[in-house]
View 1: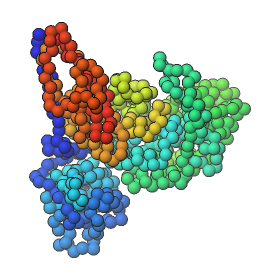
View 2: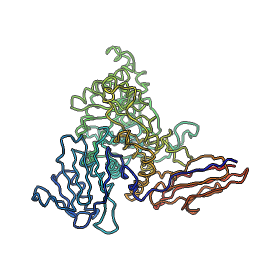
View 3: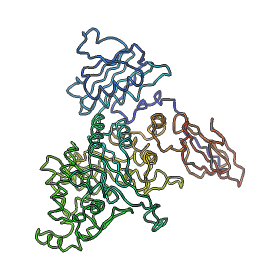
View 4: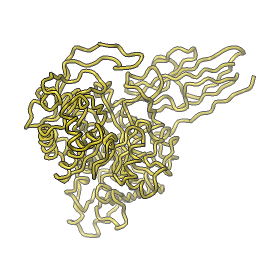
Length: 618
């Protein structure tokens, strides 16, 4: 029988920096030049700044104080030039070279000093890189940072992460925690999906019934809504609701702004509006009908009717929204509008004839155009899902391309800004992360970490001039099947780290092997210490596979720093009570026999990966 040798990766060092060209940093910087030695934080280290009131400086000052690495920050303007050249100092400056790119920074670390210069948000991003490089000691006041020169700036100006709070509500504390992890990885747009059929989550003072009625559904569908495993008519019989007051909204906006994140509100229209119609049925095409907040998932047939009364209400709502949100962008949805209620409406038939519209797609374009004109009159710009292309795109509209890249390509070719967010690119984080039956219930789809990491937002079919309209990339976390913060974090992490590198780093600087085996283990361990849940990747080097031969050598490494690998060789599902992998294993399989090697990763906090199975057959 032919011999087959399975050679896989060995464990990395604690911080994955000694042999890592990216020094463990996520997202991978534009340029890293390693130096010799390390800078040492001691209780005598001083921090010097030229803009003490700058929000990025305040952020790092608070971080260093909490980490016991600096008790005070000194304004360089109050010191003579000789003292600002002191050794064992950290210098943070917003005075930058003219050629420093937008959002760019330069970080120089020597044995004597750390110097960071940043342009605008670049100072904050350089601080995030510095925080990732700090290796804390067990002794308060002491830490080391490896020497290097790092020059960096983002590939895209829009680096977005979405959260659906309409299907399941998440409180302000969780939203801030979500924003925190975005900031760690240099994402800068938080797309807040605030309204949908299943719930209206934002207080509108002129229309209080939107939250009094529209924020609460009587029950929620249990199990899959469709497909072979669906259970028709099964609900939890439990009311679900919640909304944010305008004061809470403002609090979140300010919190995000302190981390250089812009909050983009989404108010869905004309579809996905059942919760609003439950509160104000007069905004529908059948005002005599009784509506209730959606309890099931999917697409509903009732939505906003394009009457003068409805437009007046929507303008009022958008005015309150824009008064709260300083974002230049306002997301108006525009997706999955099946036009059933419009097709049945005599008013809509008349309107199509009066406005000389071709069809119902033309009516949707008419609707979106009126909304876009109003938003534009307030000095803002609409973003919509790619269905806003139907019937013609409103001037100045930004397209989020979710149904593949076709819509984004068409919009870019017409000269409209585009944010790429296709589910086909691994950017729908409600999709499963592996094909294992041990993954939690989800809406379906398959978006493993490698798929998210491998996506390139710039379609090759676009010319270089057209590619400039692709302003960025976003991933989406829809929550039909995500009811708890723990599950939300499990579905978000570590895929959000892959998104950050896709959004920030040049393709030439990306390396999935380096990312997944050298940097991810360190970052997951840090996220664990920071109190985040996450999906534990399977052991590095393990995968579900069948191997033919008689001699095998299996080499694995933990996918999270400090974790253990447990395994069985009899095909049984491994637990933390089974054998611990400590060194490469060699197997000789007798003729006509099979050994089934199964393994899992268990972290120090008790988190577990799904198991993998290597079947060795002779």
